[in-house]
Length: 328
View 1: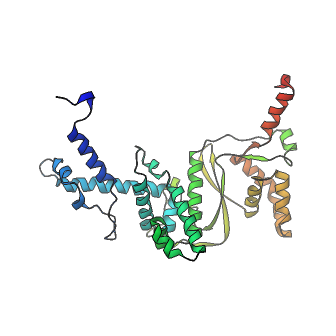
View 2: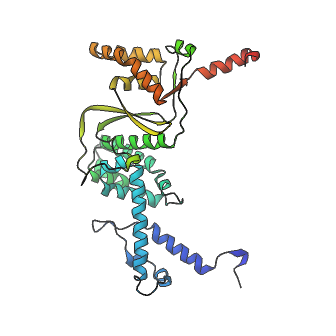
View 3: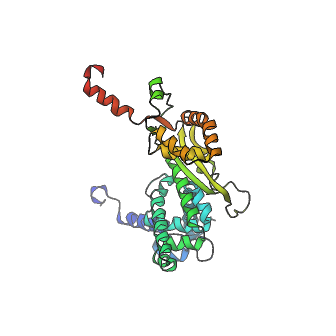
């Protein structure tokens, strides 16, 4: 008799369950490399695997599939977080990836989806580890959480890991965001620019860079070093990058520290007030530089699609329509 309702037979459900359990089991790092443990494979699963003459033993074929699957998962997460993986080293990053995948087994055919949730989980671990260090109990805190312990074992500065995570997330966000087009301000908008608040593109994120992180991009394959990766260099001073979506794809643009300060203030204040705040904090030389380059910086932001309009333009238009429906 066939199973009722077209359900798969029991032996097939058991096979699927065992095979899934093997694939989801992390590779063992105890020998200094990530490798499968064939001795842990269910005997009933191995016994059901068939092969032709001259083929490898069933457990070897299963081990090959198991190992390649996890290598693809590790590569997918390294590609999604190229700067984090360089900051903590690939060895420690793969441990973090295994922790994440154990908590959130992949359920999507697109392996890029396996990275979902990794950023938030790593961010919480960094926050808690930072708090533990302020309490001067880093060893105790690290033992309480495998994520924090792995970060500590990497010996990477927390500030560097945090910057790497922010830059990876900024690039991922820009990649997944739509391009909203270029804003070409009308004369009346230019007249209101001093009092108006700029609306930023949803894809636009400003990040700081104290270590040599920006060049490790998911869009260029991650690690751009030749040979074995060395320590990340620290810059003499902080650099600033804008990640955004353009008509041609995702962009990463280095910006002057003064322009970065202005962009940051424009998120919170009308343009004129933001400009005045930045100029007030400038030295005489910086103020001269600000005045000399301001028009070019504005042109760059407009040409790059970082600003999409004035944030108060739509509410005013809607209010005008309420006051005078005939004008709507």
